Image 1: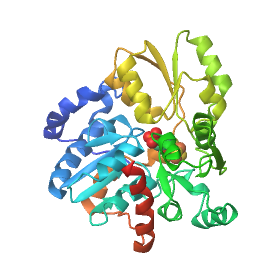
Image 2: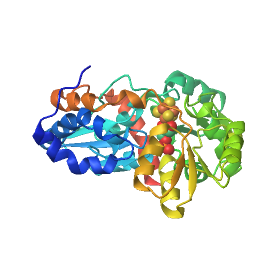
Image 3: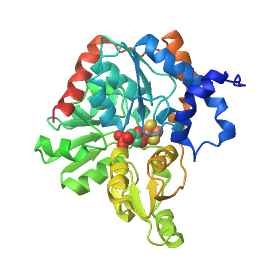
Amino acid sequence: MVALAPSADALASTAPLYERVRGVIPPVEWPAFAGDIDAILELKRKRKAVILAHNYQTPEIFHCVADIVGDSLALAREATKTDADVIVLAGVHFMAETAKLLNPQRTVLIPDLAAGCSLASSVTAADVRLLRERYPGVPVVTYVNTSAAVKAESHICCTSGNARKVIESLGTERVIMLPDEYLAQNVAVETGVEVIAWAGHCEVHERFSAAEIRELRERHPGIVVLAHPECPPEVVAEADFAGSTAAMGKYVAERKPQRVVLVTECSMSDNVALQHREVEFVRPCNLCPHMKRITLPKIRQALETLVPEVTIEPAVAARARRAVERMLAL
Ligand code: 13P
Ligand code: SF4
């Protein structure tokens, strides 16, 4: 698709926003974004809309049109606080479903309905029912990276930001934790709780290896390695710190390492690097193809047409909401 040249007004009004992304978007590319950004800002006012963007969204979305940015936990929490008529979720489908669960009366839009997640598609509600039959009485903790139907079969949800707290809150010796096998294994090490896992994996984080981390340390002496807990346990074991995307951002903001690598999705480094220009980021890059389905033209179109809208069958939503609200109440 060929982007139309933006008007002089659009270029002028978005000029201050360009300063936020200078460094990752060359000046020659900015006109390709300016028109959509200007239109989106206007449409947000007209629709009384808010844009919630995940940390893996590209810089022109994350820094130029989003109202709230964060990890899955922050986006879920913020979704409970908005009084907007329309929520646009710049992220993947399960995040938009969570926002809808918490805002049944509001219009929740996802700019591309096909923005899925390899974890969410690895498990079904029927799978959870079978697990519950096999392990009666063992609580089911479901990662938010799941469909509403799977959440509905679960006792409580968790994110990478609170998995340990959620597991420990249950006070049981055994839990079923799904669908991320690596997150489950990483949490089992942290908590000492016996975790019955499912064999789902994040297609982005499963590609990192311990050998790759060791090689990075050899090539970049003194580098600080921050890994997402969706990485295999041997990768987490090689890292200096493991935490959610928000926790990685906080680590950089507070500790200001001289040189750092974020072992996670590519755009995360771009977004954090723009906020900490004094820190050197080494960037091995694994893209999430689902997150990358969300673009400025699709956000603009969603705000113009109010589709695609996220809907959840009310009986499923009522049960899924309970699992999310239990998590948020902790
Ligand atoms: P966070 O909750 O850490 O942002 O992770 C979400 C996700 O999809 C990571 O792959
Ligand atoms: Fe799912 Fe992995 Fe993409 Fe996150 S990065 S949305 S867990 S596939």
